[in-house]
View 1 (tube, rainbow, N blue to C red):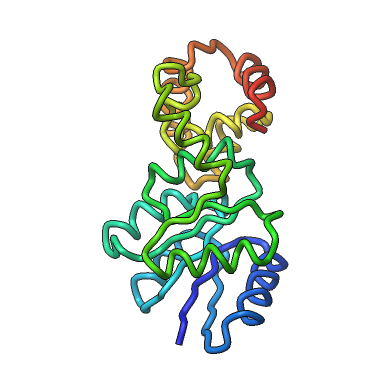
View 2: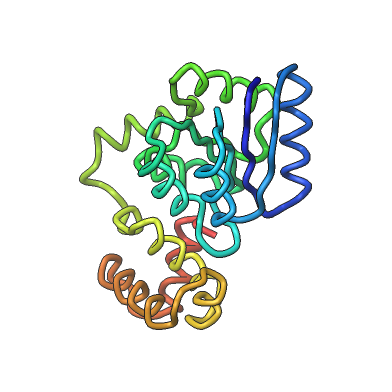
Length: 209
């Protein structure tokens, strides 16, 4: 029996994924979680064939969860299913060790194809992402400054750009204010931006929001 774990903080998304998968795979067991800590607990305490996870969930991000999952189960296929555009997260997801990346507006057959592919030990990325990966390898020296940010720094930068205060971000990501302030300093150092206004302007210009 195929065992799939779905992690997303939106009930309607989880139910939609469940319906698509149960319609296609005849013998399947699906369980759902709504945040990253529960995802990690479920992965550690039960055996799964595939994990399908959102990137941004309450508390820790899906990419943070992936790091811990990879430490325990390096071969477990993890697909990310996100509303963020491929050009912003797909390469970052690939570098983090995920098995694939899909946008939430993908057709149901794309999801099924992705699951079938990762079950075979392969990775799934759209033709667009593959093209982006080739460009990334061939032109690494032309990386935009935000691409040098760690996954958590990138999350903090987007939240700062959306108008969130340091304390708001600390609460949302379950971090201390001091830690978020440290991330903000690193963002400024790596990007050369000087203020939250500059961060917002930069994020809008690079379509990061």
